[in-house]
Each structure stands twice: as structure tokens, then as C-alpha cells.
Length: 188
Image (cartoon, rainbow, N blue to C red):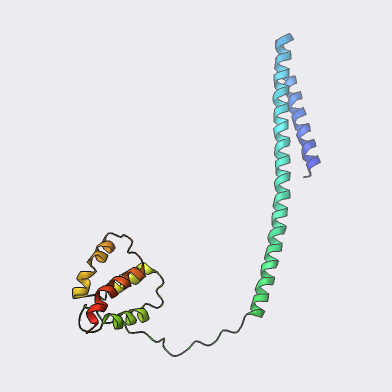
């Protein structure tokens, strides 16, 4: 039903309700009481009519917004399909997966603080093993797991920091502390 038809239908409905109300007012209600009753009822019908018109206006605006959204969704779908078609055409072929297994780097030997490996050799093994580890805190923790004996005892404060979930400092400070203590012990 069009907006004009809905509005006309509302007006006719409210007019019929008003006329029915007037026809059914008891005969003993006259004068000011009758005028007040008619005015109150008329105001009530007017308010209802305004609300009805507001609902029609709101429904009309919602329909316009819904139609606009539907059109936009259709355009977006077409754009996505175009992009997907373009990507499929422009995508390079996927190379066949390599059949050779990835080479693994041997973990470092345990460092005791004396004997072999020497600190320089042990750190070289650690650098190779942890090459892909970017997080300095994780590097330190992993390196700590390869310390035993005197070296483990010497770095005891780091284990305490790990247990308390405290920052361990920088990787450079960790390496410096080990090399300062053990590099001199490695020299003849």
C-alpha cells in the first residue's frame, strides 16, 4: 500500500472511530462535560493519528535504507568476485613441496664451566641453535637449560628470576656475564 493510501486509510479509520464515539455518548452527558469529553477524545485520536503517521514515516525510511544497503551489498559482492577472479589469474603457480626433510641443527652440548666445550665454542653452538629465536627472554631461558654444574650455580640468580617471572635483562648482558667469568678460565 502506498504512503498516500496508508495515510488516507488512517484518516478514514480515525474519523469513523470519532463519529462512533460521538454517537455513543450517553444523552445525560451535556454541556461542559460533553465538550470536555469530546475534546479529550479528539486529542487522543489526534495523538494516535500522529503516532500512526510516525510509524508509516519510519517504515518508509527503513525501506529506503534497506534498499540502499541491499544495493551496496550487491555492489560489494560484485567487487569481491572481480578481485577474486583477478587474484586467481594473477596468482603464481604453487611450487611443488620439497621432498627433502628440513635440516635440523644439533642442540648445544651442556656447559659445565670447565672442561669442554669452552665458553666460546659453547656460545657458537648456542648462537647456531637459537638463530631463529628473536625474543631475548626466551633465548636466555633456553640457554640456561644447557648450563650444568659450576656454570649453573654461577648463573643461579637467573633461575630465581625465571621462577618469579621477572625480566631477565638483555641477551648481551647474559652473554657478557658468562664470557667475563669463563673466558678467562679457558685461557692456559
